[in-house]
Image 1 (tube, rainbow, N blue to C red):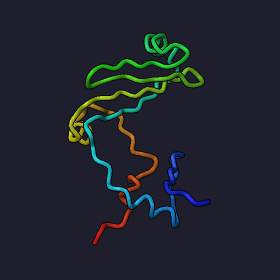
Image 2: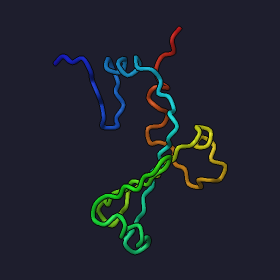
Image 3: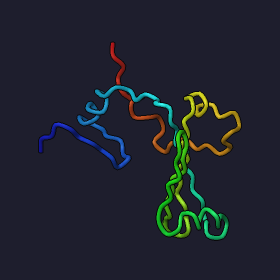
Image 4: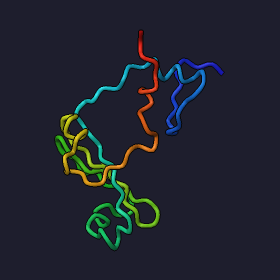
Length: 118
């Protein structure tokens, strides 16, 4: 198979010859919006207002510079994202604003493993 573009969107790292394709792309730039991912477990009992607002499907509450997006998953779990337009420094060093940050299961971002130009 030959292709002009290879996209791996399953969250796995690409190794071997295909890894070079990943490294040719420029490093992503922060554009001003951060997404904070949250899970609300046992939502119908513990978070009834959020569960009612989401219903059996999805919720999109957005306005300029901020928003809440969410959807219902199995076992009364609400998977949500809070979107905020904030400077990169705000999200990189929360100074107590966020008390339960979890690092990515992927470790370092993929582009950090690319060879640096000489």
